[in-house]
Image 1 (cartoon, rainbow, N blue to C red):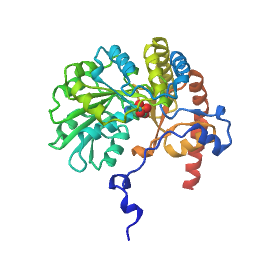
Image 2: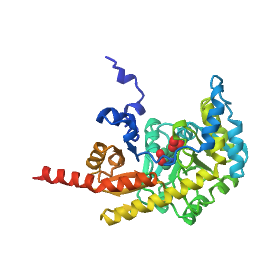
Image 3: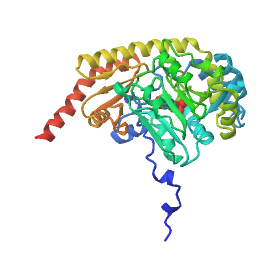
Length: 376
Ligand SMILES: Cc1ncc(COP(=O)(O)O)c(C=O)c1O
């Protein structure tokens, strides 16, 4: 007899869904906290919140939400193009940069015919999308949690269509040195499209000249987002930058109104808000340093980070996650990345960092006590 499962596409059947950071509302429900008592350092959001200019733009746009947004997203694409000194034809909007990842598969990958490459411990959505598209995703080794571009170059085969490079990478926080990246871009074969995921590029002091590779017409798509530096994660708005011919194929594959009206208005304003960007950069730099120094003092191994989060080895990541939840703190355990001993902590406000570091020793002690009791 045919079951419902038989009707489901194999890519969906095999899929392990993405595990997002635990929502504040869920923890409030489970543990009886008021939402204000909970602190979430689990999804690399902006500790300072949205740009005030973006909030004002949303207020002004609110009376128009009965209208469809501009499907072409012209004003936002123009603003992004100006910001990067590119042309509007180079810009594709997405419902978060996650959607651009999906569009890349729609446009360039045929199920069961092609393969994609990414680095071990790279952002999980590439693998997930590959599963959906019934496409093998080969992972290259990441010694010291760094991309190995030599191994990546050697792994390229005739069926490789997409390569994902992530710099800085989530969850490891490591970046690709500019020289290595430039050399890799120079030598990508024409049958491969390089997706360079730059969700956290705004946190780098010396970002690579990646936009110039778009201008030069390389087979490249830069993935950018308003979710991190610009503090608009809840609005779901990101974009791809690519040479015009690539961008126009991506445009074809998207939903007609994939970037909503409030998101478009807010993103235009956020792009202009240098004060908010500078303040965020400062808070993240200082908070990251304090987290790293304190982890060091506690004798915890951590990976020096170039993003707005730090990955730290705590013994039993799930147990520490649970112990922190009981205290009203949400971090990200990394078992789904094959790193059960590690957690990832997003950089919060100075006060959040102080409070987190104050409760961490007790939470660690909890998990160690538990482990010892289990071993007895
Ligand atoms: C490396 C990386 N790329 C892409 C994304 C997707 O971001 P969004 O869809 O919010 O733009 C994230 C989100 O955490 C990320 O860490």
